[in-house]
Image (cartoon, rainbow, N blue to C red; front, top):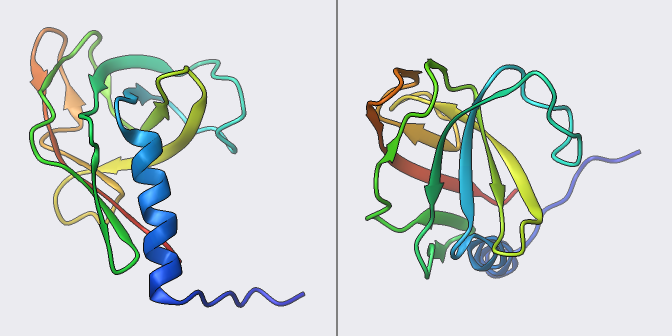
Length: 133
């Protein structure tokens, strides 16, 4: 079975914008623990660390890449722990997907100012960049 799929840049950008549309007004929850195999998998041992509300509109798509708009307010850390992934749900509470979390330079989709979170402190999103393959 072939694994080659090469989309034109215009189509990648359309797909990236579709994701951006889903993210407008979405909730991003940071978790500690193992990232589920699939976003449809129910959470079990994972712990909620913080919750963000994403802006409307959520960001821009260009050249097949979606970039979250600047200005998402910091979130108060609810529980001490190490952020390992974020789950996004839309305004209707439907799961959009799970995304890896890291620090600047990690290459992860979701970049935070800190992944070692302490209850009561603030955590900020530095960037959220999703490239369409």
